[in-house]
Image (cartoon, rainbow, N blue to C red; front, top):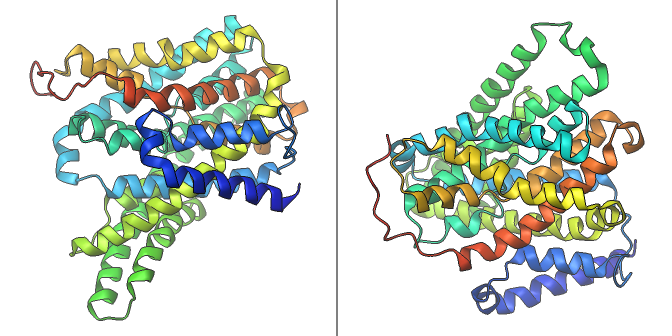
Length: 407
């Protein structure tokens, strides 16, 4: 690939969007929508300006780092007192909605796409987590009630980490068949290690990292520029530290941001500002390469069944489980539908697809890979555009009365 052409295309797109961001977003065009479209147009299926020969390893690294930074930054903006107040909503979404979404996705994938049960489960798990990057527009919209914004942010922050061990288990079954069950204690211990070590790493990095930055700032050992840079370091420290310990890096990154400790608001603000900018840059790069590489590869594989499943994944497969999980929550129907609809699919699904290919070897060795790949790409592509315009089309719900406070 001509790196200069790639750099020129991406930088020009970001620069133009930055100049006109307020006006462009006002008409319902988000940055992920724009860079994804530019990637598609620049690729071999349209203009051929850029060839789609990016190595999967680079895409995976970008997706991992970008997702870790986004999770850290989004979590740092959550007020823990409000989280305790509204915790029942994200708990319902994660404990009930997420498993039901996986089950519903697998049940529909098998007959509609003609997949085996394991391949259907693989697809459903990859498309179950929601995207923190695409949910940022919701979190910053003050017209939306705080309980709903926090619930979406917490859900998108934690469901990546919760889905990953389940995905790895399914991939192990696809590789080893029934032999994956031989060690009865391996998978329970693995799941426990993922959660415990991920939580431990996140808490330690968040609490003590923030305090050390505060201490260094109070003693004038640290310049403001390095306070901002520290957000990147803390996010990646939590992620990589958890992975080294055998924990879940995404859970660690989110909890590090959630429990970020510093006595002065200015220190927290500087950490957030730089992390938000860096996370946005990496996520937009992933979306650009997704449009350039993944869409180009998936285009000749697409069939009508893939489109039907993608639409079902973004609607019925997501909405029905969420509505079930919110029964008795006290939210009115419009608020429940809001939470049910805003489940965008993006970087996590792309990352899980890359992880599956790496874990199982070449794509040709994976049964029914083409169908799973095409469906995943199409679902993410539709989500980028449909959920991108949704905040501007969704009717105001801030003034809608609640039947009672959620339990």
